Length: 178
Image (cartoon, rainbow, N blue to C red; front, side, top):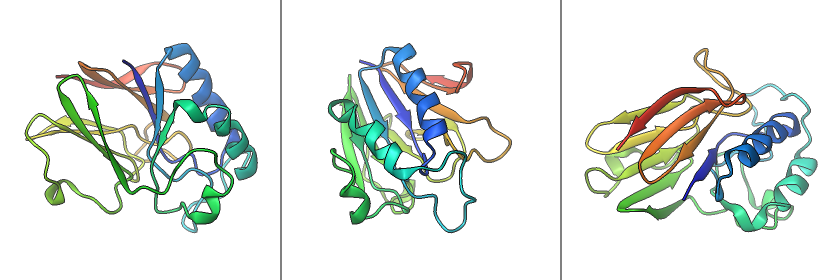
């Protein structure tokens, strides 16, 4: 199984369209959205081609492929536009023998989790791509709309044996195998 992971769309139809092109090229099975879907938030500038309603309509076309979580910029009113659930603060997924704890990242931190060594914490929120191993694997796909730290707009690919972070042209710039 291949999971396409994005975070921090922040209402940009421009970057969502680019990400969905990558999803199709990657031939992934599911899209995991780690929150901050429609609204840009008060600390961010208005993103390129900001159109939350169009973003909702476009994502609704993929509703049977989406697993989504609530970010700090998501609310109940956003759920009214989306045909898939977004109001969960976290979810647990299983991929091979790995348990994945997925969250946006503003509520649950590594030191507050009860997951075993070699399991996976995956989050967004910081807009900084991450692929590292401590006691657990820690992954962040970065942001498709507002990357930080000089990183490119990016997404993640999660399989049963690896995590890859790619720019919106498909070039891998961080990866880890487990």
